[in-house]
Image (cartoon, rainbow, N blue to C red; front, side, top):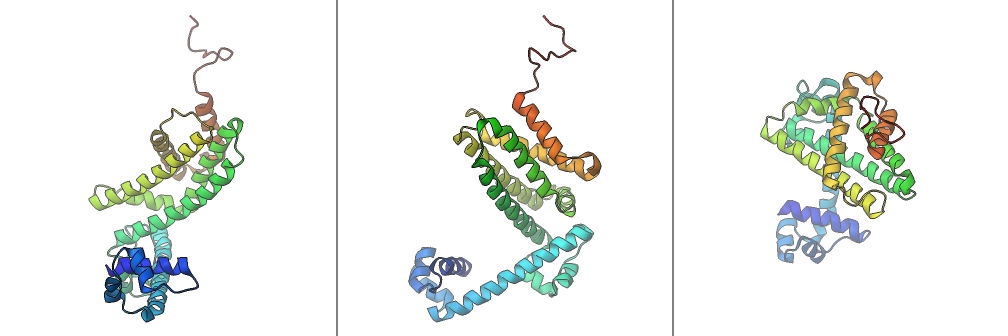
Length: 265
């Protein structure tokens, strides 16, 4: 209960800034009685100190995640230790465990942080591109979105390698469940983008957004794996353009471009 009340206090402090929330504000946001707020958080005079402490806690958490990104990326997930992460962050190992229950838990916090950052960047980019899109430019738009997503995912080569390494432990229920959650969020975002394009009249209405989202993720995963093993052969811009051209126009032969391997009937 205390954690949910602290979240409500933080959110209300942002909404009401520069005024501090009252006990009634926090109670209303948390959907509890004021007496419950006072029991767990104390009187409103404590709120400034609580908010300052929460800010410090969040800063420390982000510092640990940044160190984990460096240490896991340099050493690999298996060879990295929480002692090394603590040393990089200038903290004790106990401080790591105060924020994260295990190395797996820290990795998935890093995954979520990276994912939310990339999704936010993509959402802004997609909105800007769609604002000027037309039916004639839709294929080019989709190629740019796909290429930008691939380049963003591989901007730090250590990151996809780290993700693939952890994927190798998907027999573990916790790892499998957390990675499934990551993909579900990604599919939801991509499916929403497809629906936005349908609403704007840029693509067909009968396309299943979830199916298309799954397809793009599968295609993207395959290209990133190929890039990890043969980076000199993978040009994301050229591939995205060629792939979208095939998808947009189809691969069936046209009347003026018959497949030479198929006899005319």
